[in-house]
Length: 245
Ligand SMILES: Nc1ncnc2c1ncn2[C@@H]1O[C@H](COP(=O)(O)OP(=O)(O)O)[C@@H](O)[C@H]1O
Ligand SMILES: [Mg+2]
Image (spheres, rainbow, N blue to C red):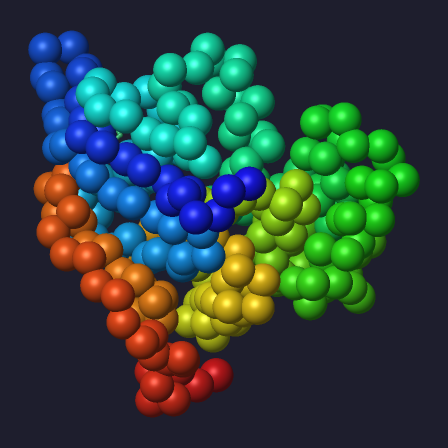
C-alpha cells in the first residue's frame, strides 16, 4: 500500500436521515484527511454525529453527498459487494458493545473473521493466538466472554479487529462500557498499537479523559467538524481522576 498517499480522504460528505416526513441532516459537508499512522479521536456531545461519521467514512452506511476515498479507492463508486470486500480487507472495527459470540472462546472469536475471508484454519489459529498475546491475553485464549472482565472482552475485540491486519481500525466508544481504570488500559493498548506498530486508528468517544490522550483530536458539533487539534497528548489520566476501590 502506498503510504505517501493519505489513507482516508473525505470530501463534502453529507448524510440525512429520513423517517416519515422528518429529515435530520446528521453530517454537513464533512472534509477530512487521515494519514497512515495517525491516531485520531473524534469527540462531541451525544447526537453530534460521531457514530454517523464513523459509519459513513467506513462505508457501513450510505451517504447522500460527497466522496470517501480509502487507500485511493472511492468507497461509494463501488458495488455493495466490492465495498464489503474492500472493508474486510482494509478495515477493522471495535464497538462499545463487544459483539463477541458467547459460546466461542477468545481464540475462536478472533479467528472467525479470518476463516470467513478464506484464511486457512491453521494460519487463522496462529494469527489469532499471536494477536491475543499482543493484547495481553495470552493466558485467556480458551476463556469464553462470560469468563472475562469487560476490559478483557474489549481487548479480545481489539485482537479480532487487528487479526486481519487492517490499514485502519474504527472504534466507536470503545471504552463506553468500561469503568475508568479499564478504559485507561484499553486506551493504553490502542495508543501502544499506534505508537509501536503505526496502526492507524480513528476512535469516537465522549470521554475527554480518553480523547485527550490522542495525538489528534477532532471535535464535532451538530454534524460539523468544529475543531481539529494536533498536539502532544497527555499520557495518562491524572492519578486523582482514578476512582479508588
Ligand atoms: N438511524 C437513524 N435514523 C434517524 N436519525 C438518526 C439515526 N441515527 C442517528 N440519527 C440522528 O442523527 C444525529 C446524529 O446521531 P449519532 O451519529 O448517533 O450521534 P452520536 O454518535 O454523536 O451520539 C442525531 O440527531 C440522531 O438522532
Ligand atoms: Mg454514537
